[in-house]
Image (tube, rainbow, N blue to C red):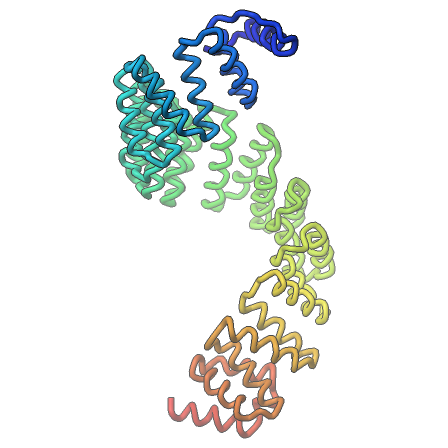
Length: 464
C-alpha cells in the first residue's frame, strides 16, 4: 500500500529522525511495510534493510515484513536464507499467495523456470490479482522460449483486464518471435473489433503490416492510431517510415517533423528527414538535417557519411574531406570514416594520405578484401611494389583463391622477375575467373604484354 504524499512526509520523517537520534518510535506493521516499499522503489536497499530489522524488532510475527525480508534476501543472492525463511512462512500461512510468488522468484533466479511456473500456479489459486500472477507465468515461459504458452497466459491477463496493454505488447512480441505475423494481424483485428478506439492495437497492427510489406494497410492502421491519439509519437514515426516505403517523401517529412514538435529531438529523426530530402534531390535541405543529426549525436557515423557522400556525388571532394576530417577528430577508431577518407583522397590524387587511411583500417582490424586491394593498388601507383607485394601476401592468408589477389600477386611476381611464382599465381587467377584478367592489363600493362604472360593466357584459353 503506497504512501499518500502527506503520510509519506510524516512517517518517513519520523523514521529517519529515529535513525539519526537513536530514539525509539513505534510504527504499526503497515507503516513499516510502506516505509520499506518506499525505500525499495527508490533503490535505497540499505535503508530498506534497516526498516525491516526495526520493523521485525517491533512486530516479530509480521508475515508481511518477513516476506519483504525474503524479497531482499533474494535480491542480494542469499538464496539459502531466503529459501529457509519462505519455507517457514509457507508452514505458517499455506494460502498466502505472496509466499509462492517469492518462492517462484527464487526458482527463477536459479534458472528453474518450470519450478517457478508450478509455484505461480499454486499462487494463482489463492490470489485476488489473477492478472499479475498470469503475467509472471507468461514471463517465465518467455525465459523458456515457449512462446505459445507465454502468449496464452498473457491472453488470459487480457481476459481479466482488457486494457492491460503491457500484456497486449507481450502477446505481439510472442507472435513476432515466431514470425507469425499473419496470426498477429488476425489477433489484433479481433481485439480492435472489441475496442476500435485502442490506439495501441492500431499501432501494433500497423507494425505487423509493415513487417509483411503491406504498406497500404500499415499506413491505414497508423492513420487510425494518430487519429485516436494525436500525441502518439511512436505512431507518427512508424507512419513516416511507411510513407517512405511508399515513396511519399514529402508526407514522410511532415510526419517526422510532427514528432519533433511532440518530443525531444533525436538524431534518428533528423537523419531520416535528411534521407527523405536527399531522395527528393534537395541536397541543401538534406545536408541541413544531416548536420542537425550529427550535432545531436556526434558519434552518429551514418550522419557524417551521409554528408560526405552528398559532396562526393557532387564531386566537391574538398568539402567532403573537410567533414570526414571532422568525423575522424571525434572518433578516430571508426574504420568506416577511414574508408571514406581513403576514397576521398584517391579522388583528390592524394595517394599517400589514402595509403595512411588504408593502414588505419587494417590497424582497426578492418580486413575486408577491398581494403587490401585498395592499399596494394595505391602502393603500386606510388611505385612501392615491395610494400604492395608484402601486403598482398598478408591478404592471401585471409582470402585464399581470390582472383582479385591472385592477378595482382602474379603481376608483382613477374615485375620482380620471379617468373615461376608469377606463372603459378596467373594460372590460379585464370582458373578462378578468366574474364577478370583485365585488372592485370590495367595495373601492370607492361607485364600483361610479356610473352610469358600472353603464352599462359593463350594456353589456358585453348584448354578451357
